Length: 271
Ligand SMILES: Nc1ncnc2c1ncn2[C@@H]1O[C@H](COP(=O)(O)OP(=O)(O)O)[C@@H](O)[C@H]1O
Ligand SMILES: [Mg+2]
Image 1 (spheres, rainbow, N blue to C red):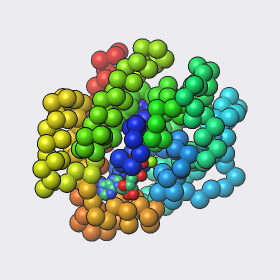
Image 2 (image 1 turned 135 degrees about the vertical axis):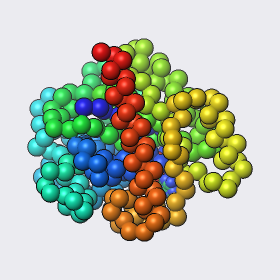
Image 3 (image 1 turned 180 degrees about the vertical axis):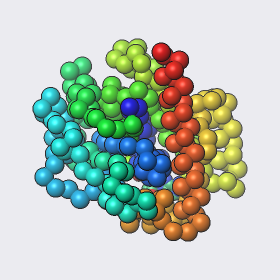
């Protein structure tokens, strides 16, 4: 099981969108996936079409981490039933987000609290992949996600502030790794909302390539006109009609393949 945090210092760069795109690709590929919505805004939970029942949300699971019983509290994504070739074996579950998780989003979270998500995820069975959608800060919740992860996927827009923020985040991962999570590595950087005709974006992408080298993943995700409409309908991009959605689906298929493959190579090297 690979556990990947999707993080950035900044809000609005596309963490949730990339999480949802990868989840959609994983569902289409039959990769058994759990999305943990660690952002108190709970946008991923909304986008995944989750209908809350009596399950505990992630904040409440973290609170009782040792007794949390993850498998009883995950909720199937509303996307699963609509998956074209869903025969009941496809798995896309969600540990639902809620404002309650915000009680852990402090800068001074202690070592014991940092382990809460790892403790909850110890009960994760039957998944190949866990995607953790992080809040837009490096406070307690993101650090808790990193503690529970093998890898961190960063999302950045090709703009000055976002590139600078990505560099700071990479440094923060390095420091965090030394102190708390020796096995943690960056999974790479996804450039999102790229406008192909923009000189500024072309310049920033070249800058990112020279700063981050092979950490800059391909493909880049372009700015997409119907993105908000698809998300607003709580649909998987793989289930949305039209060529634009099909192109976006293929980009996320490739991104997921690169991500999963990198994880495998790394595991082989480790062994
Ligand atoms: N590639 C894209 N093309 C068009 N809109 C996008 C794209 N990526 C993100 N957005 C939009 O930008 C806004 C912020 O994205 P979101 O994924 O919520 O960012 P974050 O989770 O980092 O705060 C959302 O309204 C989303 O629909
Ligand atoms: Mg978000």
